Length: 295
Image 1 (cartoon, rainbow, N blue to C red):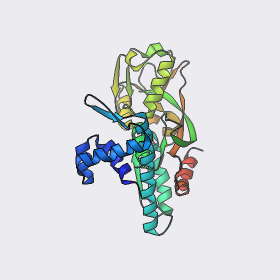
Image 2 (image 1 turned 135 degrees about the vertical axis):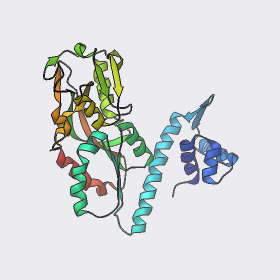
Image 3 (image 1 turned 30 degrees about the horizontal axis):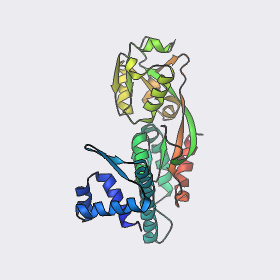
Image 4 (image 1 turned 90 degrees about the horizontal axis):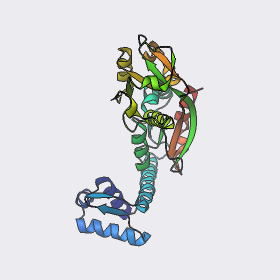
């Protein structure tokens, strides 16, 4: 069981308000403050910082938060396994949108044909999934974004290339161009927090360029909408080509590519989970099914 003071700490991190935390816990505001003070005395450091109206965690608080969130999640999983009288647990995992939309349908179709039990799949961007991993809302994730390799355990699944796509009628379709030739154009990108967007922004930075150098930028958080706009000739977009073309009949096949000279963007898809989990064996069959899609 999680120490009640740590539970109070986690609720306060979530609500960022002593009164709201007290309401959630059935405690008065002074009682919440006292428990946080006891934790700070125990660890000999401040856990929260407040500047004006800004309320956040110190570095020590962030470290304790990761530990407490992991402990709470593992405790919940143990209780679940005990209630079921077995080591079988429900699967709670995530996938970034490229993997979720173009890989997971086939993986789940095969997996569910031979497996019973509860399963929860969250499809979201890299930042959101890493946050859910940290807080124990999911147990593992398949992502293509950049992540802190010190904070999570991981395994590389596959490397893909971020390629530039356009309408078949675009004057640059099928050509090789310089990056500078693209700057007067409209670029369509994923939302902030997306792994593919972060990879693209890092690649642009290596060329002393940024999204702000393009004539205009559309931010769209849905791959299907991005491709629909591309087919209508309403912009250019960098997409992971190989993984999407694995999907039979996927609309990316109706688009054309533009080769950008000296601008190759390769990045790995990764299986990421919290370090030290007791339930890694339970995740292996889904992991193996995803690995099979990339080989």
